[in-house]
Image (cartoon, rainbow, N blue to C red):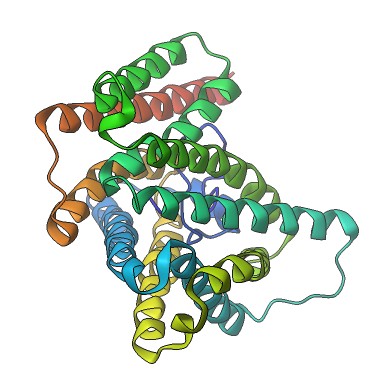
Length: 323
């Protein structure tokens, strides 16, 4: 995935409540607890689904741009252009923050840049749906470790079964390096969740996200320039890069921020668990990356594990609140 957006729910136990791209709102934790009932829930659900479609189809467009600018060049274009948009919209303050605040932003930006660099290296080598499925394991493992509930071992085993099926007995079919990049991106996604939640607590609105995005963009610049050079300045390439930044970061951030004001955080996390399926659909329609029945079953197992972990944690939180 590329993505998808910060620790929007503010809880590490929601495996995919954060997008593996830089798109999610860092200030959303407080918004996730809003009530949503009955027919009115369809509106925010539609917004989350639209955000998922946006980020994954943005990732598919990014793959199409890679022959022009390379994987690292695309990452640089996306982060730099998304950072410019967010800085212009948010106009974050840079005064009045302590060393710990800036340390959190730096860590958030580092996780953001690393996650995007590793993910785009992955989708340059393996199908988009497979890459997102492997990447989701990072947040899922974080959820299992954080919850310390025995039942989550079941969800972990289910996810591992899906990964084994996806590998078909050996990741040579997928390209071992591409699979490794996806797993590493998942680890960075887990770090991204932790630091995005901390950033949301220290900075108002989306100021922390904008600053971290800017830092991540600066980190990516040397890599993008080294790989793409002058191709980064070609008008048509810049235009496509802006489209990717809007599709994969700015638009999902806006849609999900609106949704989180009316949608309970656990419901949001369950919907985000569908990202591998959305990514597989985008890969098929845009990149013509057809999946085998075994691949489809593997993705379904990982999605089921992610949803199960989210619902288990939500039930545990509800039980603690009733005590």
